[in-house]
Image (tube, rainbow, N blue to C red; front, side):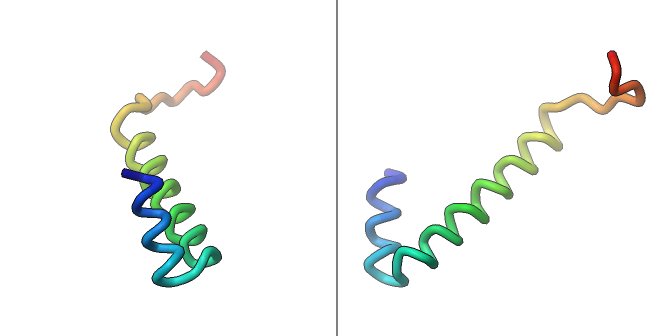
Length: 46
């Protein structure tokens, strides 16, 4: 699915814009992952 979506995006808006969209989506996914799965701690050293 990812590769098909990328192909369609590249055809519609170009490679540079497709790269920007995938980077932004990856950043958002990483932020949500961190917010939901990384436990909050006050002691970062262990």
